[in-house]
Image 1 (cartoon, rainbow, N blue to C red):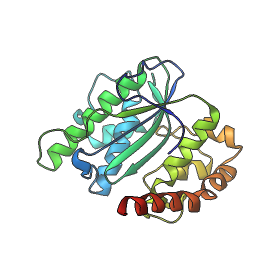
Image 2 (tube, rainbow, N blue to C red; image 1 turned 180 degrees about the vertical axis):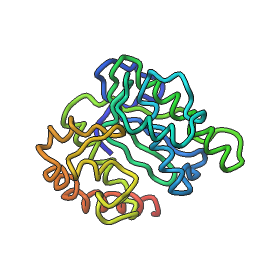
Image 3 (tube, rainbow, N blue to C red; image 1 turned 60 degrees about the horizontal axis):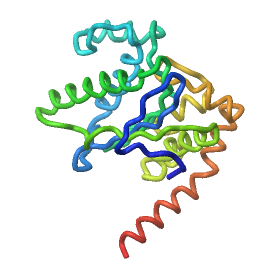
Length: 223
């Protein structure tokens, strides 16, 4: 992992300009994404609920209406999504609060929307996530770079891909291209690394070490 301040008992008050690593996994470690459509819809939800000006739920929109909304920038953004990664049974987000309390509003709306979607689609009831989401407050530029690399290496460490930028369900391809979008705002972290090319090298050069750490941990657990 990385150095950070885990907030398990006392939840932080989300401050304007604050940066937070947020993550959660499925109850009993079950998958929260079972199809690519689940993953794509989760990203649509994240992009949609960045805008605090909407008084309509995403589920009330047609697909054409949703695509129209997602094609333009938010009018009143609650957060910036600096990085994200979707794994089969968990997710990671790095969020910058833009309004003070924006992270909590954004997450409440987005996660409730996804649970409703998932339960309806898969004919299930009850909680999807294993308790409240977990939070790490990101306090320094160095920590921000480190946590973003940790996110983008998750699929490589789990052997879902060999190149971080080849994983469809993370923000790594956005970083590699040097672009930004309504879904992911990569400018802050790219400015710290210098360019998309330098950031990609920063992530890739750590991959073998991250895999070895993961394998060593698993070996110890098996002893």
